Image (cartoon, rainbow, N blue to C red):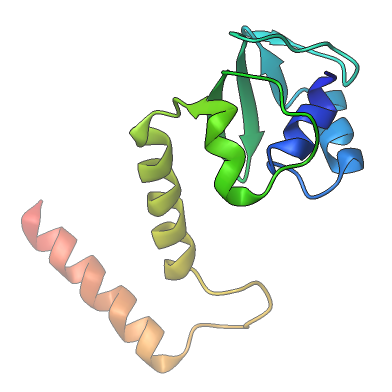
Length: 126
């Protein structure tokens, strides 16, 4: 089965076209080699998919006949993604919450006071 079709069948991508584009961008690797969308996948291959800033690692246990329901996906793949990848995503989310969105303008009086308070605290420690 083609890698783009497999990733669509295993519900990593919503459409085959999105899976194909991910392969063309180099976001999909099989056995640590960047692959084209037409690459055939076999049982026992290790697939790495970069999606949403996480490198998902999968071990292919069997080839599905067609697109599966979400509950049946684990019969065909084993997720060997390291836990650190998900911890990194949580850290990124916390970092994004700290910053204001672009276009919100100058800091408010409260923002300025918070910045000054933070600066005063760090100068005292040094």
